[in-house]
Each structure stands twice: as structure tokens, then as C-alpha cells.
Amino acid sequence: MNGPTAGRAGPPAREAAGPPAGRAVAPPGATVRDRTEDDLADCVRILAEVHVGDGYPVNWPERPGTWLTPASALGAWVAEVDGRPAGHVGLCRAAEGDLAPVVWSERTGRSVESAAVVGRLFVAPGARARGIGGLLVGRAVREARRHGLHPVLDVVASDTAAAALYERLGWERLATVEQLWGPDRRVSVHCYAAPATPSGRSAGRAGAPTP
Image (cartoon, rainbow, N blue to C red; front, side, top):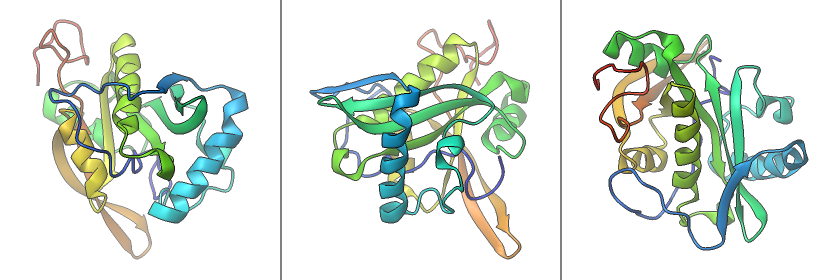
């Protein structure tokens, strides 16, 4: 979805430096599980805290629970710390207006439909610097690969903390694109693709060489 409330990854910001080679290790007391309907109220509450503190999403959605559950969703997960929700991530099929799948497709020669978009990513302010963001990204990546899709995402260029997290996890910045978010507002957006699978092959198509 195009615009400032699109499904781009938000600020798992200010995560502490973690393990190399794109792997995230669960911090003590932290787990990631499938999101349920019972989690939505907590997720909306955390999203509101992130919106106030970090400006994500840029425009508060009229129905935040619906915004967290787009029609193209392949899955959504919550992180818990000591049994309490502390973060969220979603995975969607590529939709109209998504930048990263298009850039990835142009780079690799594969179809836009071969990508899956990691988004709706945020971590509660009080749960940061524990590796929660990396843990959530890792869960979404595994699900994308289970579907035979290659994970991609985009993030506003001004969110340097989030960009640093993705690069620490081994994601490749494919391009920086200008996107129109309103009649008089252009925003720079970084487009990222996940690293190759451990076999050295991209998840975009079985047997295809790594881009």
C-alpha cells in the first residue's frame, strides 16, 4: 500500500549490537509466537506508544487493528518478554504501491509475486536494546521462505536505527527511492532484501542463483 501508513517496517529502533552473520538470538525471557485476535488490543496499545515516541506510522490509521491485519497478510507474530507482548511483525504478499518487491524484481529478473514484504514491525519502547527486533524479523523471514518467497522490506531513510538493524542482520540495501506521500511531500525510502538462504540460494525461485 502506497503512502505514509504503508506496511514498511517501523522502528525496532535502538537495538543493541547482536550476533554477526544475520542471526538473532532470543534474549532471556523472550519468545515469538503467532499473533491471535486476543493480542490485537495490546498490539494497538504498543503501536500507539511507538507512534507518539517515534512517529511510526507517520499517519495514525483510522482502524489500527485492521491496519495490522491487511488482506494480503501471510502471517503476523508477537514477541513476548516475561509473558507480556513487547513487539509485532507481519508478513504480506507484495501489493500495489510496495517499493521493495519492484526493486528486487528489477534487480533479480524474478516476478514481483516471488517476494514477500516484512512490515508492521515495532517494538515497545520499554523492551528495546534486547534484540527483540532481530528476533521478530527472523521469524518473518522463516515464514517467507517456507512459502518459497524472498523477504524484502522498505524503511524511511531517516530511520537510521532501523536501517542499521537490517544491515547488521545481513540485509542488502538495493536502492533508495523517492516516494510521494502527499500532494507536497516526497520521502526517501530504502529498499532492502534479505540475505540468501544458508544453501546460498535465494528464496525467490527454487534452484535459482543467488542475486
